[in-house]
Image (cartoon, rainbow, N blue to C red; front, side, top):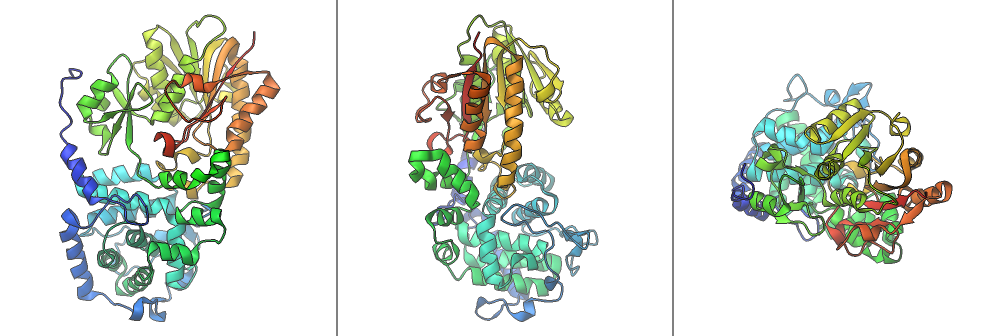
Length: 554
């Protein structure tokens, strides 16, 4: 590939068209999929099918007839707002406890005349039944079923949006059904979540949202279940999003904000604590979590510049990292620079973390021994390796899980990076490193916008376990660091116990000299009062990365 000579990837017009199809409604949700326009015929077809055979309950209320024997059996695999999974009934998977009217013998949903919504439903089902990750399941389903363009954009918005909004959706569903969601069969709950999301958080018309959901249900389970879904969704559509918030949200301001923007209260509180004196920005933080993020690419140093990458891909150069490029959407894996290993997908905040390590002032010369102690899946190790290669340095990368270590190897396959499968707390490496990155395992609260179901999986109990691990990893890095060397500690979380508390503990226990991290992020504004730096999606457009730099006294 001749760098900088190619035009854009030819999909700029498609991206603009997709954006028109996917716009937020007045609730402020960054919904991107609009059934009107190019998707109108699809919705008309689904609505016609539903009108031909559908049953409607009077006044939109869930009638007793919709609560048949199978539905009264109880919870089959729903995910609660606390993030716990009840994935079986009587020891059987939820898909096996669902009624069999019209369903395939193997329990897999029938092929639907509405492929985007079928894909979105199946993503929700995989997340609920198998604790799958939506951002891994969805691309595979899109490829398997041949969806692209507007259909792929619609499926993406519905799947990710419903995963993000789970707490709000479940509260509305329970009210509309007149029963706890634990008493609704899991497969029906998936369709209801999909339907209520369309009603409350997109510009899709109420008629299309209801009728397409009813059609999905009828195709798999028959008319009885379809009547129940119809009744619940019509009741959900009787109120605007604002009216549902007024009716169901907690009375306290924090609880109301958390409910309105579909976050567990404990996460909203963690954000407010991290914002400190600027806690008034909490609404902006929660709203940014619910917005669809741009795709961030990193241009590999020495292979391609950000300017060239932007020209080739039709993207825009980043604001903060000299290697960042923003894309509106699309499949970055299809881009030639990504296929050829000249670029990769990496949030700009993660790029800044790696750059901070390379910029920190050492006491003494840099001998070229760098270490990424928590390397999986390899993005930061690859950027460090590309920078190290320019000066003839080498990087060691440690990852305890063999499958993630393989991901690291693929990311750094032609770079001066040596991958070690080991626990970072007892890596067996020889001390004497100049620079060590500890991008510690964390709750991931700073990347909720990119991991839509994560907010409902994490609990406060996770923090206690992770804090112990973070402290141990930072101590192990300190033991491997030479006097005068620098450790950069980072988390993809702003939660104070995982960030400033860990660093303060290290300074006290280890006698570390804390550097002003703001000086390692030149041009990046509004990262806090120091000495650590906190990035935020609503301020910087990045994940909420925390960064601190510690130097070992001689």
